[in-house]
Image (spheres, rainbow, N blue to C red):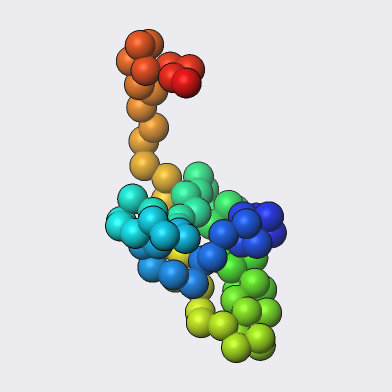
Length: 79
């Protein structure tokens, strides 16, 4: 999670760099309460550091992971 917070700007809503839109939102998707608590705790720690340096708060969503569906075979390993 530390790498996740540091690897992008979690303080911009629906934006990463010059890319804007809901498809560029920042999110952590968890399975179970243990992962949820870990995500929320790491967010709080990182946000405290950001705010102490004058940055805005974190807008990254932390929500339960929805059911995952694999794409059809012809969409696998698409490069």
